[in-house]
Length: 107
Image 1 (tube, helix red, strand yellow):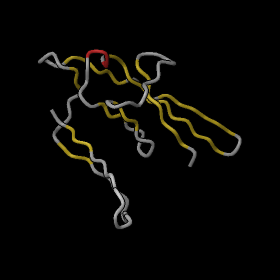
Image 2 (image 1 turned 60 degrees about the horizontal axis):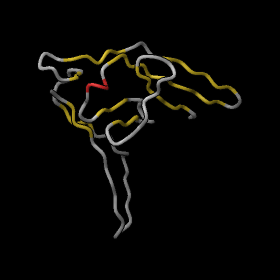
Image 3 (image 1 turned 135 degrees about the vertical axis):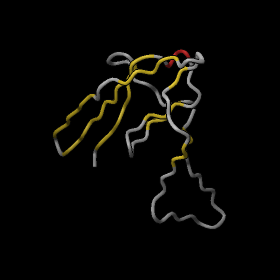
Image 4 (image 1 turned 90 degrees about the vertical axis):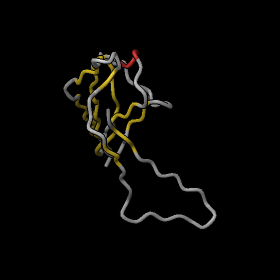
């Protein structure tokens, strides 16, 4: 409870905004980037903040580097996989729109 995640690129306080290409899961803390670009190259660190009662504590992760692969593409190398996490029980009302997200990884 009260845990939030932000990611920064290269140095504090250059936080990465969530936009159409980048998503930060507030459940897992993972950063997802769809179709990396040259501007994504650099060192990434997760900034986690815990809000408990009247105490706030923040920590940085170690940096992970996003660099160019042999083909000249920005890349972290991941084996192919599809990640989907849904609650054990998911409910929807008849006639309502439901959006489920899944993430595909791979190179």
